[in-house]
Image (cartoon, rainbow, N blue to C red; front, top):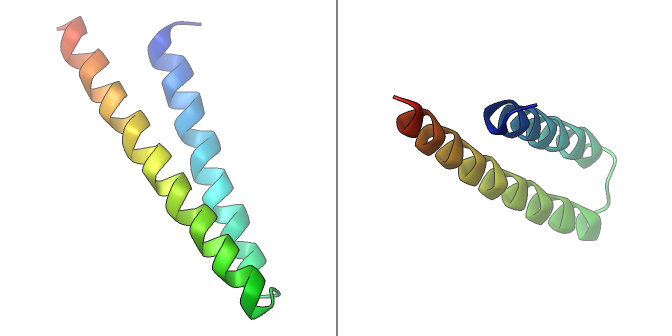
Length: 62
């Protein structure tokens, strides 16, 4: 598996994690909601980092 495929797979996993955390929000207490929202924010940061690395990798391949 090459680096691009690994990053694409990581991106899928991060996006699924966001969806999982969002699904937990509806049943969570107020305290837990704060924690879940923090986790969602962190996943979005990971998504941005992975997307940036994918863009850079694709530019290097040109």
